[in-house]
Image 1 (cartoon, rainbow, N blue to C red):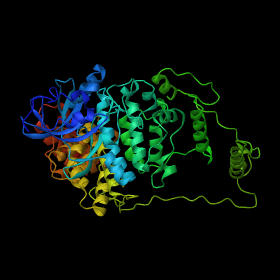
Image 2: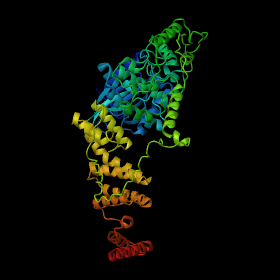
Image 3: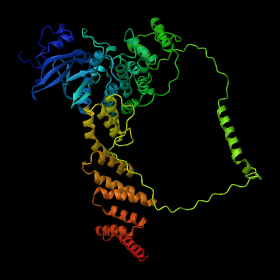
Image 4: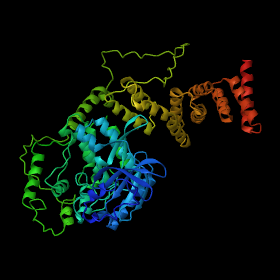
Length: 624
């Protein structure tokens, strides 16, 4: 077929008779913007047509998204499509699809050119597998958090997050790398209609949309958090939290009812993770987790953390809420039964009634049998009485002036402890070998371990605490899955990340913390450039604090560690050594250190004075 410039449909006499999908199928072989040749229609959905295309200028394949003309006629939707595509182009995040450019077509449509992904979207994965493991779900959701956290930091809201907008690819050997795409434009597009109603221009998909968003309020970061909570719920349970006869039914349920808990539906989900999903799905925005950054960290921790205590629920609670909602819906009322039905003259008013601001149905009365009345603080009185009794037994005679021992019993002899000159000093504790990994509890799924390792790297837990650090997680992962992609990736990332963490600690004058980080790098990656010099700097900083405390034994141990580094000592290190050796009465070593410092700064009066004093002490010690 010969190349046809631009959309190739302007001259088609049957164009007015085509549905949007038919028109999309007719673009095969056409040229878009005199540059992109359409090769294949990949999909057609509420976001329009997605094509495989070829960039003829660069000679590489690409993805081409074209917003249908019926939506492009609306300036607000058209501008939002272009603005969001340009925003994704600016974000340049590894978990957001790369957008190369945008433009307008001669027929009024708009398009964006994107990275062509070789992967499978999460919708297809869930359709095939129904539900996935908690570790894999957290691995996927945490990457979405990173992507949208960056977008939110720049004031960009997705508004239409759902499984079909999350693509999983393999990248550099790593599985399930997330690419978020299609920042929201429109929803519920009927491909056979030529018009768009006000309700159809709502941004977002009903099943994943937050209640306030459905009520017509502007979406914000916690709206995206609600959508991600719904995606998480579906990954973990294989179903959506709310179902109904239609979109209105679903949205009213969202505004009125708490979502069911994940761990009430499936048993293999950690309670702490179920708590997080519940917080994401809170009907009121103020009750949700406030940021994607916080959610990412909490997700990775939830695989180990215990669940928060839950108030007891009776088996009929959820049934009653469902029956109450069903009763109000079947009667045509938009509000709970106690309230009078409101007349609705506009679709937005209908959705507004289903928002989180709608009152909840009044709970049914329950008969509660009260336990026997008991003083709420009785246990405190018992403890107090027992303590008084003990005091009277042990110290009563002394308090009330009585003799400490009965008259007929001789006083107990007082033991006098003689000072014992033990010439054998106690054996110093052996230094911990940071290269030796420690055991990790609840090893479990390799994906879970990889997630823990990622979090440990992000939080700077490289060799401590034992059993909860990067070193130990990687060692455990190596045992159960020696070929896991995270092993090489995190091992390569660790030195640079640790050096950055250590440098930050040095800047903040947290010398001990910095030293621990640099020791870890030296143990796990001894060939890392600059680590010895940085550790030496940390040791000097910590040593100055020990000198002020006159903790001479600890200071000498620190100086010995410094000497083993093989780093040429600077002026501060030499002065510190002179002071430390003087504190221990090791005058020859003090003289040597001060002499070396004086050579570096011959005009330093304090060093000269300290050197003279050390020489005098050495001379006096020699005469004894």
